Length: 411
Image: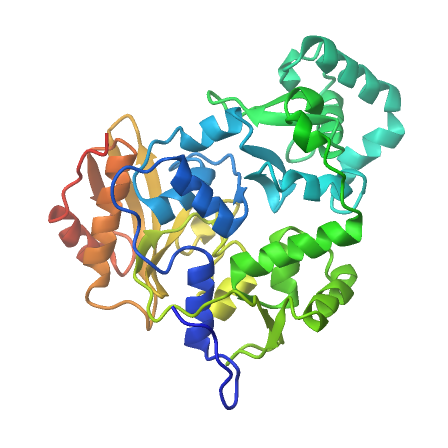
């Protein structure tokens, strides 16, 4: 790798920016060889900063996929065990996320602020403070608890999530930091407990940075994880309000902690992290979760990779273009294809329900590389075969390639 250099015209070419982004996310080089352990996971978290959580399990829980993308096959209990040991902890960061416990104090300003919290959750603190205190006292006496353990959770609401008053109270207490939560492996339900019974005392004793200082630190962490980014990219990483962050980012640039740059083809100014390096090449071959930090910002994904990506889970089936749960395929430094995947656990098969090549990006090697990656994923998930349906312009080539890429055991 080498450090960025200023050039005539744009400071960075589009290709340089792309490789910087991949390097910052730990996706420019090969996966580690040999046995993967917690040390590898810590290195990934040091790069990406946090892992977004999602409940959809049509393939595998989304939070498992960023580790597979960067580390390949590994013990699937690594991250849950780290959560049990409070090396990582869940909080609202980039949506619901697992973040290193060292980052948790930087979120305490959010625990005191209505900024970003869902209105129904924030409102219950004002509308029913007695209920909130009753729920907190119940957890203190009974904890850890799920919403189903509440003696009177109340009727479910009519919104998409259908949260009861009890659930809203638990979520208010979770947002405000009075409670923390872990996930129950069987059904992914949040299990709540008092924060002081979970977070280590030495972490609780740390002074909480004020809002401005915490946001400065979070913006710098985002810059490190992104490599090169616009103001909007930096704010999106930890869901920070853009207008309020603008003067903070400008101050960081004045102090030399961020380097203003222009990027070929980008329609707005960008900032480079001073430690960012430009990999001379990118050798990635991996499938990406829809919620992977490389692609979770759809505008940034389109700007960096020229790849228009939309999650179609909530789109009616007859209107879907690429499928229900579609993963982009990263090969080298380009997103070259996308596949709609499902784990048929009863049949022991990884189903490719559609496979599409990315116009202008896919090559003759795409199908073979993708077939090898699918075989690797199937083995990691304990599935014995890859089945490719006849849907999408890459399906026929991929089906043929899949027959020559046997699934191996990753036990």
